[in-house]
Length: 279
View 1: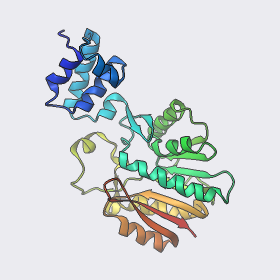
View 2 (view 1 turned 90 degrees about the vertical axis):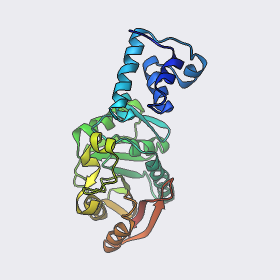
View 3 (view 1 turned 45 degrees about the vertical axis):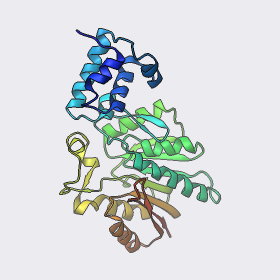
View 4 (view 1 turned 90 degrees about the horizontal axis):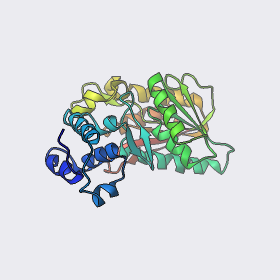
């Protein structure tokens, strides 16, 4: 097998792939950081390393998302183990962490140990990020998928998070009344008829975590109605929703008598989250 230097490997396919993706693939094959790639660009890969790199390129060429190829994805100061059983964490979702921390800090002045539920946790990226930031809070991760729960459990162990538990549950069905101070969720919210979903997302990411019935609002509707029972009085419900769903989410929240309703924007100034409180 013909082998190449780091520089040659990047240059020979730089027109076909993002340089950042190529560097991440090389870092994975060589078990080195990005600085090594730049400082030792004349390093020649071994046959084994070259074979691994070529294999990763074939997967990239097949449009398989890089997070699934490498098995990890950065999110909010941590690197999460990822499989095709869970959604790939998106940068815009990181903003929901800040909102949960803000809400929890306000509540903490008036309550003892804060209890937070990440409903539909997937990889655990939201709940585990919160748990790392607030070690004295108790975080519960729930998901209906056993495979997703296994991914979340692996991330909990990898990140050495102790103030966390994982339960398999169909949304909020498994929980008692009035036990959580905050419920946060990034549920499925894409309409089945949407033509805006990228091809690689449609082909490789789990549809159960992407699509919802009733114009994409069914799961959000279920969470809002169930959260009234599970939240403590004054508790927060913070949900990620589609860019065009804020008005409908607000309508359901008002119908269910939630208060302090706020629409929050993502990095692109798009309506992405809705925060509210149980009266």
